[in-house]
Length: 354
Ligand code: COI
Image (cartoon, rainbow, N blue to C red; front, side, top):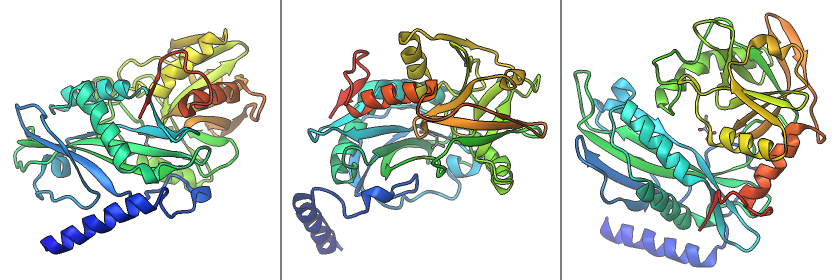
């Protein structure tokens, strides 16, 4: 086995030297998993702190059937991207924000989390190790998925005795298959989060429950589901995997982050960019009634970036919005992507070069 391992490693270093890029079709990237060469792994026990991690070959991990994550959903994830600049270097976008959000979420889920420096350093190491998988400029990005899971065995309901922090990556293109604007449907029967719950953090437990309404919506021809708050059933919350914005004239409104919606890093960057352009941005309760006469609606997220919404269907009525190149959404998206990819000057100090 050890000579096999040695030969894998030799092959590895050979292909790393010979191949500038992985052998895939960069023009056909969607948001599907393309496994890369390496992943980052760091473990610690309950009550301790993460100290030292390592880069391992990407591959399967061993878990006890009674691990906290498998039985009780004790898990949290993050998402960020690396873009390749034309000079061959890589840019991360506000990775310290992901680190801090992970820390907040980990506290809520009774899990340890890496320090901001440990997190950013681990992300950099993982991107460097997988550099041949970062798409060429203009072809997409390397999606980076950090995870913390309760990996130790537990039977009674309690925090897991051991935690694993991991980072894996995948080259990606657009999140939504639709090249046109999204057609959303407002969920009437289901809600994504409740006050006091975990809607405000990236707990893995927030995501499986949206699969059913999402699947039903897709069967009906919609792109995705827009959720309302679970108390009043009236205020916009978010779409399954992204935040939502409503444009009316010079005013851009987005639901305030009051614990039930995710505090998106793209969301807050778009708010700053829009204010810089002179739009009035309001973070507040946004009523579903405001969808009836909005000029534009768009979604934001790390995976989604900024996605235009062409229509929202609510109580069987379809409301349509402006889309295309001359929209507020497109203006904000170009600026954000310009900064993220290094084509525009980063006056905010948001990017981190690798
Ligand atoms: C992201 O935008 O990075 C997310 O974490 C959403 C995920 C469902 C792809």
